[in-house]
Length: 359
Image 1: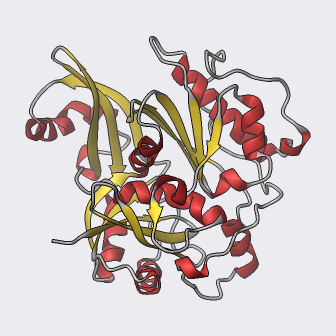
Image 2: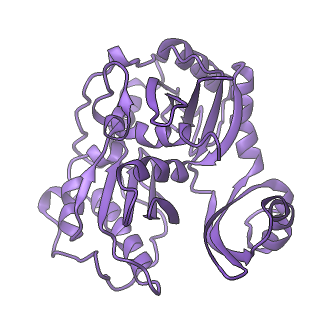
Image 3: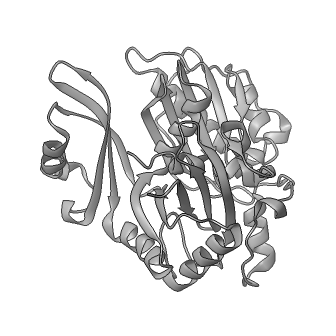
């Protein structure tokens, strides 16, 4: 039996992985990232299977990852995540009946979807939880790239659930929001006593270091793995490139625990940053306006986008909630040099996926 497990993510900009021990207190054994050439992947969808497979092999070899199996994270905005209540039943029976229960809720035919259900609470014979539905073709394309690399995907998980596991190590009690701001996607997860009960995935476009690197190198000049001993601190990007072009989250009055402090400072005046902050604030407000919702006690912030100028400071001004930026080394012990800068901020979700092997 393997003594370690790997969490892996395919984003538009790169493939990244974290290998952890299977001990009671996991330790990070290896981590790495390989940039992808333009148009190889987009929003957790593989467009060029061969290019992604090459990057995966370079990642495993360059980062010296020993485990040959992994949990793959999905963080696409095309993934449906919504609260769903069903009758309490045995897990096997629920898996069999769920497709028939939810087929009218899905954006694609049920035979073209991959379904998951994450129970959060139970009241009498009613089971409350989060329904997750992804397009099967998208998931199969990602798995196929790993098959070509002679690696086995043993579990496909919503990346937001990985974020919840990582955040629960730091804040196992109370109501906590973890916000992962990536290069193109933001994930917002609300945890109650360590268990996720609310998830939103929204678009974002900020000039992270990966985005700037892609712009400088386009067309791509090849790929290069970053191992622990090669990681350098990445300077945060300074300007947002384009306005967000997506639907906003549900609006509503600001509730307990999330309060506007007035106008945003000038250093977050660029439209994409301001829109992002407003989107996060309105999402938390939507959650808090629900019946019997507990006040959010703190916000854990990660992902490369959280290092972009104005994001963290703007959120601190927009929300009267303690905000803490977290990196891989804040969540788990790292053998060797820990990753720095945006790299370490991105790996929080990847670590959480590695922790979910038994799910």
